[in-house]
Image 1 (cartoon, rainbow, N blue to C red):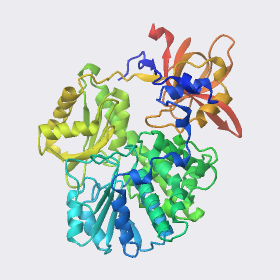
Image 2: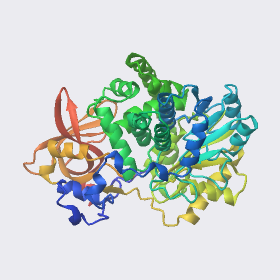
Image 3: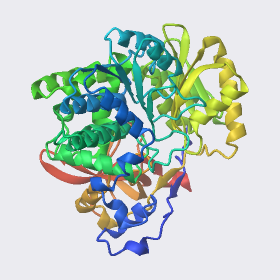
Length: 573
């Protein structure tokens, strides 16, 4: 869908005055990068655990701790979600409760194809067979009004921990912990589900230690590797609070103190644990966990994170790798079909909200398809698949400036009853509707977007951090960037643009373009790779939009450009 001249490129503008902290010992180029991400002072680069917002300030946490203290000697069942955030949340709470001496605890994750998402009445009845006294939800529950009601009818108390945006009505849980509750003053509404779970376990640990259980307060911090993985994999905004949690978790991973399952996921992908960065969590470990929930049962991922036996963890990691490969194969077919649909339409005729449905599509993979199509056509996308009950399950991915959950709420207001159920965040959401309502929903989604977001930007502009001078195209500066994170959603990894000459180019793998380039006459040669961009022969000077990374091969490290876009200079003139 992108024109031959490529996507527009625009440099980020610093949001703060970096001159106020130029004596902080930070590389000047990195200072400019931080300023463009809203960093106001060098103190915001302090990632000590003591810098997180106070545990006691999270909405609902005191009531939740009191409820847990009432159930330390009773039976508890954790009800999780079927993605990486849910898996890490479940593993974190299981590990902490057991370390606290609370032994009668189990977990249950609904199979997405049988039960759907959240604490549904059906999954509550399954949980009731275990006769728990308390249900704890992690990464779900804020919209589970009927499920909580059924749990109470069956004699169970319910503690909800979630981070999704609440609807107009909250479930009548016995305690509800969520940084996005109405009236919340908690400083980081961007916590992932595993972040909420960590805060709750930290508060419980303190309460138990105050009650005489020595060492309890220190237990949750041992599992910050799980917090880091779930936070990055769920693509929540990396505000300062989340960057602290992620950085602390990465520190544990690099030091060899991660749970065996995370180390096994790295080893399976042939990634160095000692050099772990946030992108490894988002693109290596996270997708393998997510694949299990997308295609089969996330329990294999949870068991991988729960075991303390490295050989057992390696076996689970191998299973997850196989599932992930199957997911890739399914995604490739669906992506081709989705791309063919949008490519067949003139860009001027594309709806402002693209809705896609094919009866053969896999329900667990439509979220990935929505993300890929969004990247291709630069507008919100909702992809649907049919579930076993005949409903369409949709997964939405949005663009900056369009709050997709609010968009779904607007459609629901315009046509009450059209959407069976919905929920989510600004950039991602899920919904279900009857198949016969698909056409009507598609029409109203674009209408609501046009009404609510008349100035939405569909240009696909790539925001960059400007050009790098020749001396910065070095291994030393690549290492500075690599260690300057953690990078992620809301705190993006630096992207640069510049004019280069391609000296060598060849296709590697299935569709990747490997190059050697230099930045000017007499400039030093540097390796570059553009994934999924083979097939074009570039001549003359080109404009590259790229990330500068460290490439390790056979024990040697070199700087490498990770190219996002290649444009012939003459095509831009």
